[in-house]
Length: 282
Ligand code: X2W
Image (cartoon, rainbow, N blue to C red; front, side, top):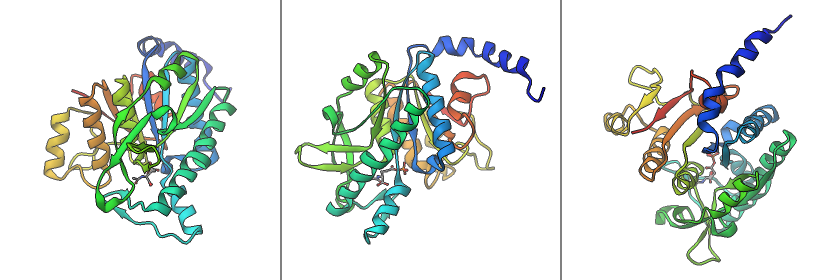
């Protein structure tokens, strides 16, 4: 026997208290473009989400797709430019962002979830006015900061057993406007409005690291602020920890920053004693 089936059964048995704890919970999962990698990674992510739904969790997927937007902009001869981690988004760019995120990327994820036997419906912040944004910074053009969330549509989908898959594109106060919202920001705003039990930010690093490069498994908001002031939390981690702090302030119970490239990263975090990445909570 090349596999220890007794250990497999034991793993399932040990998951019982976690399954009980998360039954009925709302878990928002940010799935970034870098974590989507190949078809295998996508299928594995989809299976984890379908399993969550199967055991009574209400998952919401909020996705990114930065690398896919870059690729399409390059094909169209439009240059990509980032300021403080956000894409400078003019009128032509926002049209490409909306096409790529709500079309290509969103439907790939919806299909991957259905391939694993789940029911998924894709939507963007424009659908049912889920996410209304205003311009974040004049330098960035049509980059949006969410100011109004209408999450009833997500609750309706939970009741129907449907997994919502949300593209981070928002409508404006003027309904003819379209805003490009950073995927982490959108996931935080949705988790905040739902007062989610968990916000999982799947990325391509193993978590928040201390000055010696070790992953810190548990952090308070105060520790995050101190580590940011000292410069230990820097670069690409800053938007993630800022999102985490804002989400906690809005009533999210805990935020986890974890490596989405790890096999079954979300399951490891939710359903085992081990956990994964860095958990931030008050
Ligand atoms: C992002 C939206 C997609 C995203 C962008 O245009 O790339 C802004 O920068 P990842 O894969 O999660 O990085 N929006 C404002 O967040 O994708």
